Length: 109
Length: 117
Image (tube, rainbow over all chains, first blue to last red; front, side):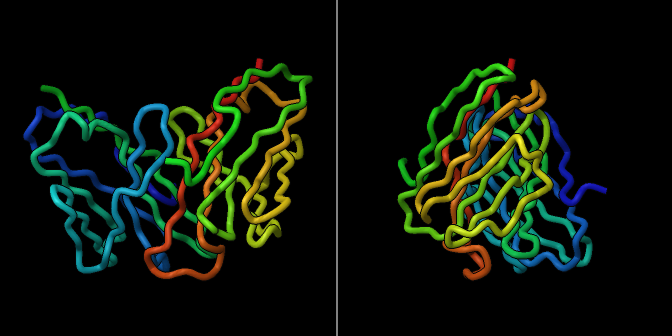
């Protein structure tokens, strides 16, 4: 089983749509969780951390379900500029970041 | 953004060549990392340096040789590579390897896109 699993997509959605990405992780001892965004041929950049109580940053909402070892990212009112690959990231032992393979999002007019 | 810089941005090399990738961070961090990103695969951690000491080698072949002369600079020396080593090589930094708050994260450079012929 992969340490971090994501649906690779692509998710093709129209502008204004709401889209949700899911991610599962295998290590129940994991303590920190993140969503990174990676644009085509660019480096990954932190989008948001994921808190146990869930958190929101503008149009983006992240949720964590420790019991199910499941993380989600919800994007409301999608913009063309949201088109990218979204990486689910889990911090393992000794600050090791374990990356999922990413979910590709394409927002079209 | 110039927090973490990498050179060169693109590199084409033959299997018998020797080349080096350079990474520099201007964030005052103490930990630096090399990652490999192949097409359609997750980022793979290769090496970690904390306060200039190597603390992690993720079973990387010896044809990849890291060097960390100080906390701001990290090199990856390449020799006798194989075509399957073609990938995007990303450098990252963070405040340190073992300490940090819940929100500590890693900052990535733009990467070196390597093609081995």
